[in-house]
Structures are given as structure tokens and as C-alpha cells.
Amino acid sequence: MIQIENLVKRYQNLVALDHLSLDIQEGEIFGLLGPNGSGKTTAINCLLALLKYDKGTITIFGKNMQPNSYDIKKQIGVVMQNVAVFEQMSVRENIDYFCGLYVRDKAKRGQLVKEAIAFTGLEDFTKMRPKKLSGGLLRRLNIACGIVHKPRLIIMDEPTVAVDPQSRNKILEGIVELNRQGSTIIYTSHYMEEVEQICTRIAIIDHGHVLATGTTEELKKMIKTGETITIEAIALDEALLARIRGLPHVFDLSYEDQILKIKLGTARHNLVRILNYLQEKDVSFGRVFSELPTLNDVFLEITGKELRD
Ligand SMILES: Nc1ncnc2c1ncn2[C@@H]1O[C@H](COP(=O)(O)OP(=O)(O)OP(=O)(O)O)[C@@H](O)[C@H]1O
Image (cartoon, rainbow, N blue to C red; front, side):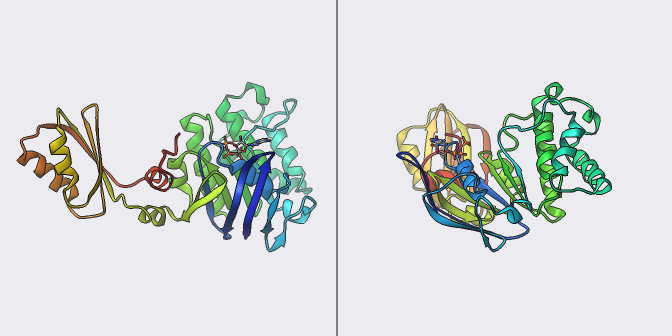
């Protein structure tokens, strides 16, 4: 549905997109995951032909995307980071206005507006003006305005930044439902838990370049970490740490503030083996956690830094 090939975008001396390539299929919830400043918004703005770029090609629905590609643009719904609604209009009037840009038929519009209100859980706020809404509700209104015409492709740029957990869940549920009803979705975020929860495929980007693409499972299989074991233990000396480092499947270890963190490759019974070893050495320990790899581990292994940096 979308092909982006070798996109380069410079802002003066800064290279915001550095040969970014993406291939997005119809029916996906495609996540663009990267830290602040990695180029997500720039990529979206280029994709929508709102921003000129220096090099590369963009094809949407099999056609070259240009600033005047209105036949393509009318099939796209956009939810940008900044809320863009009319202060003079109520919640319902705003949604109806945006729907009216695409749908003339009044009865059909009425139905679509009703569905968008239900999607975003705004039923109790339809008569309110935007400035009376909380931050989370305002974002939900922004989303309702962007998706009300049920576009074939929906692009959402960090729609959950600074929203309360209730609104966040409502938004995520709504996105999955829109996808179920047939829309392809591109979703940018720096929250890996969200991306992991809803996206069918993910591109991890940093410095304007795609580092890895795949389903969550595929991405996690690309890295060495199969499991991270965290153990509260007092006063471990260097000699013991070195011996733990030498145990089977252990490839990394840190010990700070009496917290021992061990990274291991995928293997059966890692946790039991480590705990048995500590018991053998008479090490007393407190709380113990074992975690499967997260997208943060993927990011950390590929870039050497935390996604949250
Ligand atoms: N208009 C601009 N002029 C100059 N530099 C810009 C401009 N817009 C973005 N940048 C820079 O380009 C890089 C990519 O920014 P972009 O906003 O695309 O990243 P992002 O991943 O969307 O980050 P965020 O989540 O913070 O929006 C950053 O270094 C940013 O400072």
C-alpha cells in the first residue's frame, strides 16, 4: 500500500531522514517506533507531501505521492501531534465539520459522526466546546475528527502523548477497532508498550534511518537477549560476579545498588540454574524477577542506548 524508498530530508545541515525505506501492506497496524527526534514526524510529513524532501520516492496506493495528489489524500485520515480543532464549535459540530469535507450526504454523515463519537467515547461531551475538555478528551476529539470519514489509510502521530490512562486505553482500543473495520494504520510512538500492544509490524528508527523491521516476535528473535534475570542480593564480590558471568548462556551482567541483572540467551531453566548456583555459593537473595525481552532490549542491543533516552 505504501512504499518509501531511500528518503533523505535535510533541515540545513541536519540530516533528519537518512535513506529511510519502508514497505507497508494493506491491513497492517504499522508502528514507527523511535526516540524523540528520530525523524518520525518528518517521515509522516514527507509521506503526506506536506514537506519537500531532498531524495527518494514515495508511492501510496500504487501512485506517486505529490502535493496535489488529492485523489490519494482524500483516502487518508490524519491525526497529528498538535490538536487542530475549532474552538467556536462543539465536539459534535467539529466532528461533523471534518466529516463534511469528505461526505456530502447528510444521513450518511450523521451515522459516521455517531460512530466516531462512540469510537472515541465522547458521548457525554458532544455539546461541549473544546476548551472545556481535559487534555485526554481533547486528544480523543482530535482523533474523532481525523478518522470520522473512515479513510482507507489512517496516519497517527503520537496520539497518546500526555493523555491519562483511561483515554489512552480508549484510543488504543479505537485504533484496533478501526483496523478491524478495514483501515490500514500507521502509528508513530516512542512508547514501546503501546506499539507492542497494538501493532502488527514495527519499524524501529533512529537518526532518520530504519534499524530493523518485523513483528514484535521477529524483532525479539534478532537479538541475543532471551531472558533478563534480576536478583536483589547483598555484597557480591568481583570474583563471584566473574564466575556468574562464566555460567552457561550468560552473556552480560551488571551489579549496582545491590541489584544483580543478568542477561542470558534463550535456554530452558535459566532461572532455576542461576538460583541453584547462588544457593550453592551461600548467597542470600531477596526478590527475583525473570523477564522476556522487550522492544527496549531490541533497541538497546541495536543502538547501544535505551529507547527512553
Ligand atoms: N523545521 C525544522 N527545522 C530544523 N530542524 C528540524 C525541524 N523539524 C524537525 N527538526 C529536527 O529533525 C530531527 C527529526 O525531528 P522529528 O520531529 O521528525 O522527530 P520525531 O521522531 O518526530 O520526534 P518527536 O517525537 O520529538 O516529534 C530532530 O533532530 C529535530 O530537531
